[in-house]
Length: 552
Image 1 (cartoon, rainbow, N blue to C red):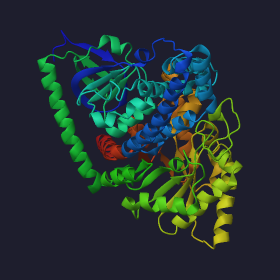
Image 2: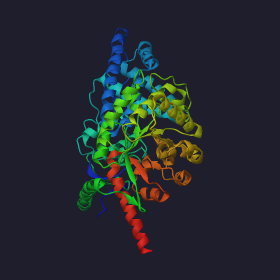
Image 3: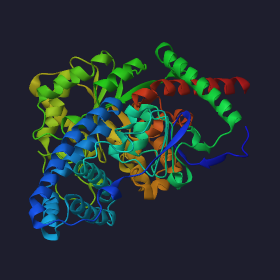
Image 4: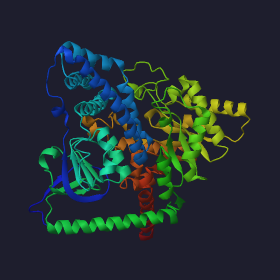
């Protein structure tokens, strides 16, 4: 391969795969939509109506966006648009915009920009990371509202031709909505780690992605030919003919291997060290369950319930939850289903729960802490799951466990509700290990847990003190850091005969699977499209282990 006219750039591989195509460089259109302009007093009413009209239209768009993303990547990513809708309902925000129009005689677009910019600056200066991340949510909403006011129906991203390599500074949640529809060949970003929403969506859609390429939007030009290697994190600009021919053969081979891997996902068991390894799916909706079944998933390792609660005025009933469970899990009938109890906090507010003001919601009343504080919410879920467990192989997963007392109280309540209903067949109850405290307290938690599920995304976040959505500390969000691997080893060692599964992004990384198997992991739960590849990687690790023993 000639490299005389080619330029190689190395970044962070955040979504695997190979792609080649012409670049589409994407820039935000904020500046052109909010040029400084004043109005007369007679125009105030008209500008106020522009704001109200934009708010109504954006609310409708947010529901559409949530539906599109949920269909392609599950409810967890879709829930961010529901959070945006809650933010849009903030009366103080709209009052501040109205005041800006009336007091400064600003256009709706200019007033909105000034108010949002002030709030973004305040958020970004905050010491709390979760609050700082809200600046991106505000920026996303600002762009949506400005486009509605200006009458712009599409973004530049939505007008992108299919099959292009998307080059961007970073991708906001609203940007990701266009990705499934545009048949994006690959993505190259200046910012965005492996745990970002954009990276998770890219993996779910099978889009090769490389991030952390400084000044990519300046270096790479529109229509420039690129090769993107999402496995190594390398991109090649202006590849010559021989490089293109060579790489195209690699892409064709990769497609053939992918088809064969999918076929084997239904036919062959995953075996490592003479033990069968289970590969299940993380899902959030019926569409996820369909893909999981089609890809040979052996059940559901993590099902998220948040979508039933966000953007509702009242919590769902037991019957409502039960009906959703039956509908969602129909494609996986007869296979084990692990349902995570409601995992909310002040960073994901709902209308019917009073959230106390918290300086750091990620370290506050969330997950099991919230459920224990609102027993009615907990009871409804447990009652629905108890009844569903009489029909399917159901396991209940408790989020954000830090103390053995958390699990003891949940188990006691589960047993009380079962006795009240005359139910003797109890579902298995598991603890989600996503805090260092839980990882170091396995022996104390075991009396109350039938299984453990390791959420490596949050375990990494809390251990490394680095938010996965914060580009300023992306270099510290290291999922395979020795500290993380040591915690995983301790969990496996202390758990004894209690089953342990891994359901974070780390479990889907091909280069890490052999290490996780050596540590002792025998159950993986990953995004539905990744199931076949993870199964194949487990088999390859098993063959390599057998070969090394034969050679010895």
